[in-house]
Length: 168
Image 1 (spheres, rainbow, N blue to C red):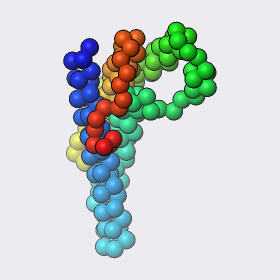
Image 2: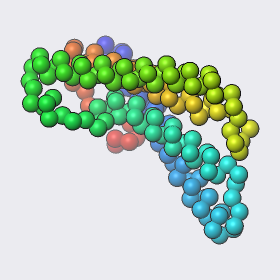
Image 3: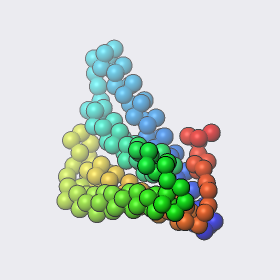
């Protein structure tokens, strides 16, 4: 179990670093676009499309990272009032729901990517596979992270968030 946790922690670290780099690129592109538009009265042809795709990727990767950290939005009134086995059962039920959502993202994201991924981006000579693949990648990561959370919970392993640049 320790090796599995270390491997998943490495994946979490990579996801967070990639999301951080994407968010930084998004910020810089938007700033440069604003300056180019209002100071030089000229913009790059891709200056609206690329930030949109980066925002989608950051959102999907952030959602997956939130599953790992159990940092997603939740109503915990009932869960916090339960102790022992009932609490564990409800937590398992909630994690199964997250896994089911990840499966939906994975399956339908693959279908969407296969169906529309061959189309080309409006302003760049690349296919939309880069855009549509955010959903299945995020779904697979959500499944991995939720399964790890559940295995750790049933094994009695307490762990905090993975060490990443975002938590230091």
